[in-house]
Image 1 (tube, rainbow, N blue to C red):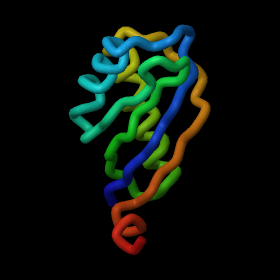
Image 2: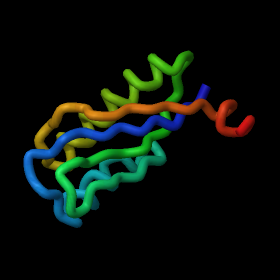
Image 3: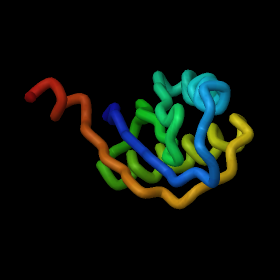
Image 4: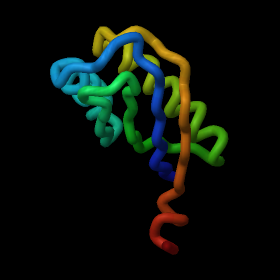
Length: 92
């Protein structure tokens, strides 16, 4: 099942547009978008495949960690996660 998972983490600085563009590039392979310009919290919305909400969040955390490293950001404490399945989204 496909899941849309949102993740936010604390940054150790105020993020620039360049920081978030690098993160966006890094999550693009997972139909991802990135947020955080001008804030000290960065995040992404990712699409992953998993059998359960918990598994989707875990998979998204792994993808996010790799993307954060690829973007050259320092890994921060995760402050928010949420997930919605494709079926839940379609049902409204």
